[in-house]
Image: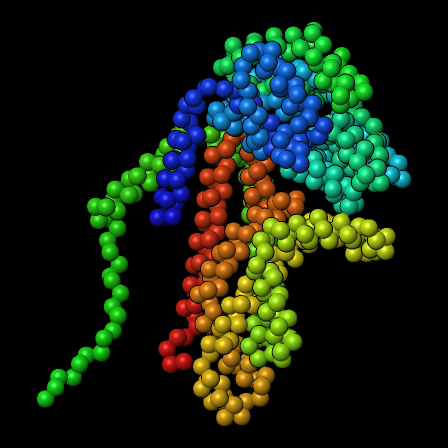
Length: 260
Length: 270
């Protein structure tokens, strides 16, 4: 009983600390603490680099706000936003109806399809028939995980959930899973690596379902921060219009990631 | 004429009343906290995850007991080798214990899973063997890492326990004409286990609290289920508080079970 009391008291103290109002001098932009190349990953010196990091710089410059990139573990990034540890999520987060119950989103700032990759030499495609009896790996809390649970769960032998896509890729290379589903661009980055080249190839994009896969990638915001949302929406429009967006994208991709 | 002194014996304090004022206050605070948790927090997800949570607790307990039992079976020879084994064997046992106790369990687990597991995959002979369906799964690596860790820690505990059994008892047993194996089975091992039991209780509780590490290599235990709840409901405190409560209950039951076991072993006259 004493232990229980102690833990309850600690929990109370922690929650009080978490709900204390943050002093808003600068905007804390949450990015996933796990490397997600080519969008955001720490370089050898620990500095965050990638398309999304440059996009944050451009966006904040446009909106005339001071932004600090704050890495947060992906599986706790939405609670971090709602408890005001961060002020916005710019971390390749898909706009989905499920997430919109908890947080608000800006307009989309890019949109790429989800794809399935698997080992070379095995012929199957990214459909329920193709994945029948296979072990599929996904990253937790991603739209691909939700998609896989809805479309592939009835037919695959198992869906394994990983904390990071990196771990799923490792296990695919090690033959512990037969396929992994994720955003096409991230998977492409893996397939372009030495390890990816040796083991795996793309098996195609999954059939679209906007209800689950979302209407593109947006900036996650607290529902009450309406002014900030307008500011970011205007900034997205501005960087699209003045060519900054295209200039950043050209460094990383050979196609337009904004989508239709 | 000197008075005969009464032997000094320890008298345990009587079980005090539950209704002393400070206890009543503490109980009221606890009840208030429970009420706040039930009233202000969201628990509507609980029924949906009930089945999976029970499954998760089962997996956690399975991991705990299987690794503790097998680990202990390894710990006995590890401890014995360090006490009476020939030099090379004693060194090997000591080296193993030092190596495992000197490195983080998470590191060992990942070395086994991402290191050894990936190495296996590179050999077509292993990949096509009958063992592959097991080797490609995650739980054998989780089991191996937890089991080795328990064996190493308990090996050290058993070394102390074996060394601490009074020489006189062993000599008396030898004087009765017991062979080496009989002596070990009847005297040395039971006396060592009895000495080590309080430590074993603590170590088993520690082992319970090490089991969530296997969730990092995709084994689905109760911790993994709670992580899923957190990811799907975007709640933080409710699932974690429940998890804390679950581990507290499991620990309580473990400690109680070990207490029963300790009480069954006669202490006096030994």
